[in-house]
Length: 187
Image (cartoon, rainbow, N blue to C red; front, side, top):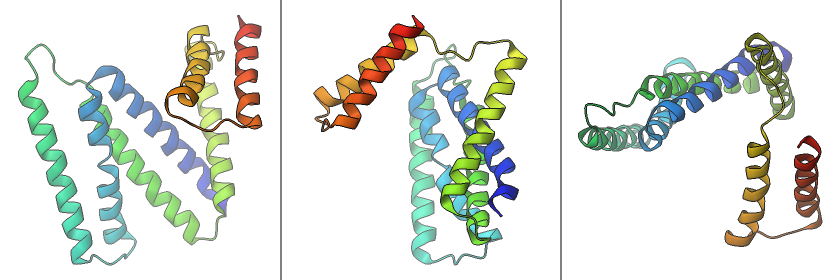
């Protein structure tokens, strides 16, 4: 059953990632990330309307509070914008929000139909990778990440252990060593 859902779930996952990232590149992260997080409210509304989930008073109040918080945040940030600094990423954040709500709904439908979580995750990322590779081929771009991206990934891993006090173990250390080796090998 998971296989039937894999293509639309993979497509929604890819679209969500691309739109959310585009919103960050072209707009304000503080506004666009908050807007994207509306997907939880939209997913709840879809679950009530289309999946027959109960709309309790608590659920309704929480959804309204979430929407009010986002509206206040959004209106407050709009006042700070100048005429030259419009948030051009907001439409992408709204579309990413809708895609994520669709993805959440498809996940719920697939799970209700008997799909396993592991299969859904596996098939989803096979589809995401296939769409990503096809996009790179069509754009004639390299699939090899830049040296800066690889280096910053390794540095972030090390910094998380130093500053965020994450625990080091053999597997994590091996992963960092492998990342460093890959940076050197690609470079």
